[in-house]
Length: 617
Ligand code: ADP
Ligand code: MG
Image (tube, rainbow, N blue to C red; front, top):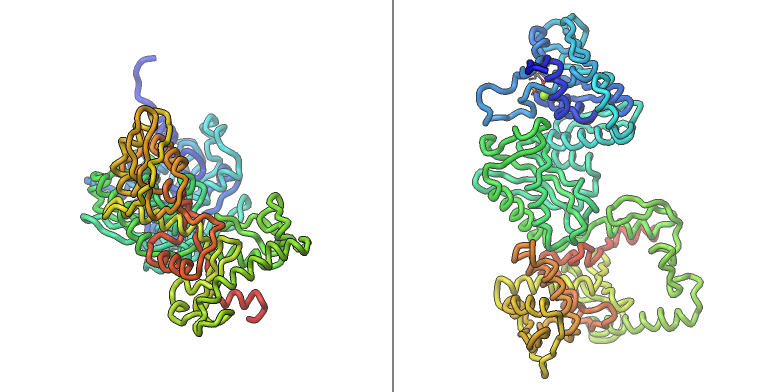
């Protein structure tokens, strides 16, 4: 075949291959057009997952009758003049409508504010019909029927009605977050209706829209991020570390109002949360970057979801720094889902929440089966034998209240007296008892606080170790006899290489012939530790992370490994002043609201909620 110029329709179908991947891409392009036309209402209707019908109606500026033919012609746009570096609209390539028109049956009906009537144009499989008069209000309605009828190969790749319907909802939600003042509705026989009432562009309005899209528990469990560096502004919300997801799908990012999926931003979010989240959990985030359009390239891919920053280091540094600072500034805060889940669990027949805050079904109340029938614990069963109750239950609780009550009483007498006023006013309150050898029960002026002492202590040790990296080395405790640990030669070598860092943490370690190290000192704050196990775990951790991670992150993993060893293991009985000291230390340590694995270290039940449980309110 000789070289020849492809037909206009062929060119458009080739372009459609990239721009129009599935029904959700059509919806995205049409909604972007409506927003570029300054619409305040956008209505979307779909049928058959969008393959049968997509109709987008807006109340925007409209298209003048004489421009309708151009709107469906390739490379025709009203949004780009001569400067590709100054893109302020969502669209600019002038290829969405002709691409859609080449693979589907497309009708555009539009009316501008100044014209007395509407006009309409059709295009089917690339064939354009003449413009004719029509009846419509101001704005534009774009209707797409039989998507991909002209390109059956693409049709075969569709995932089925439900998947396409869901993908379209996602597209709308993603874009709606950036336009809180616009009302969106998404309806159709193939879906349940989604209605996002118009809010406004203030920070509160933006947060209302975020709650509409992501659920009301996100604002409650997130903190504000707002920072600027060299003309780049970062604003938004990130979840507190105890509010996480199993994947990164709930991370929304916008560059100059455009929804993007960007590796750099995703990587920066991961980096910012690296030391408060386990590697398999993901933060929930909504981040808006605003910067000079000339410093970011959006013309990377026809779908316009990729961006390139002129100064990627600046953007990454801004995101990591701003999120870390926000997390530190937020101090300790436990997820409300913990307390909410607990409240729900207390109520007969109430839904049970899992860690994602989603309901996992309705179960009737049975304390023995609370944590799942697989973990049935006879000691907690209402049918437990009496002697068990005496040994396990009463014995422990009397001991605990003795431990906690006596020295706390204001007048020096043992028994249940009021805790000191001053302590009641603190965030975590006055320790009243230790139960089940691991839970500190504390009282504030208006709530009951339960602290997981093991998780809390682990976090405190970790924070102290991290601090030791930047400031004074931690105190160590000399061993009477050095402890020799036998290890594979590689591990011994790796440990020796890190001996200086380990010394900062208070772990004195040196080579002891081939395949062994001698431990002379251990970190004082860890107390008595199993040195052999600690050293082996450290060797594993260093080996695992030696190759890829940056030095600093590696050190954080080392700190985490050590923290895990030194923690007040559940099972240790604490004296009241030890408990109170732990609570005060938690209050003073940013990030101590979650353990190193992202679980909450404490939960707080408001007195009002407790009273509601007892029907007093
Ligand atoms: P682009 O958005 O990149 O300009 P499109 O093919 O999506 O390219 O649209 C072509 C042109 O049609 C737009 O530049 C705009 O002028 C006009 N247009 C499309 N949709 C609308 C709409 N809903 N309201 C007003 N004008 C529209
Ligand atoms: Mg467009």
